[in-house]
Length: 356
Image 1 (cartoon, rainbow, N blue to C red):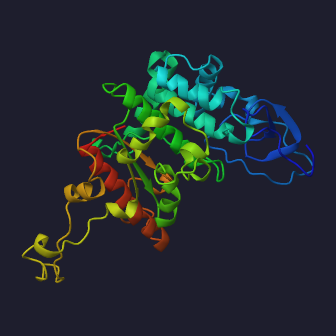
Image 2 (image 1 turned 45 degrees about the horizontal axis):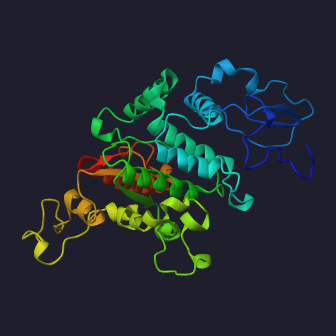
Image 3 (image 1 turned 90 degrees about the vertical axis):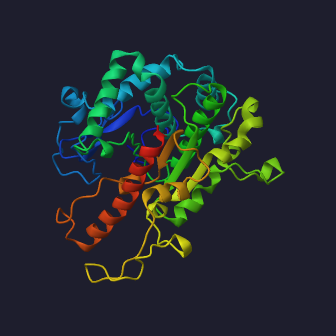
């Protein structure tokens, strides 16, 4: 390791080296190992100064203890699939993957980071390829088991796949590729239920929602050099698919989770009990039911269609804890209330749409 540059790997390629990491998560900067560091759910990697006698044990020395984790199993299968040049996909999917990752004509400054590539590959593999192998079905079963541990209530067992990506690694580009993947496949294979009809992107606030505006197709700018959508800025669309790109906007809604909170009804929608004193001694206020919330948020989508929901910063969206369970702290209580609004909104949408 160079003391001025601790980086070991090329950001555009799969990691080939790593620093030895002990069971406490400490990195040994004097011990560079070959291969990628194995994923360990119970060990947080913490870069720190080494003591006089750094541990000689590395987590990669014990693959049996960690190799069966779903992350490591999935990485292994994705690597094999990548090396075989993405078999067992639709023609459209193969064309997109080749264009994004196997295209020798792609300019170096337009290449995707390896973290982006692996996230895209994993989402597509899980959706289209995993069920074709025993290893893939085992991984899909582990995902289903994880969903069932959320709650005994089946309504709370939403189909969810999470991608944990570092700040600055390009989550928005990953979102763009997944939208294109579903949109172009759905356009070509209208009866294939693996692909979504429409898309909802949910942000944790107005600022991030505005930043996601680059995922709407820029239909106003005439000069190709000035277009402000990620699909063409980042060269994500093969030439043959450009003529149908504009239609994506009709299939896409970008919102923030605050829109899932029922609003107070106004005008002739109000209840005759509005303003009356209730049993709790407070004035009654009529609010939307969830059917009205869903209709307001997803007004341009036909209920019953296949809906892909992408949650940005999804760690803020979880089944809320019951009052009194680690919510005594004011900040924790506020976070729990926000999670309740977000999760409840998604749960109600899943009752009215086929959520992918």
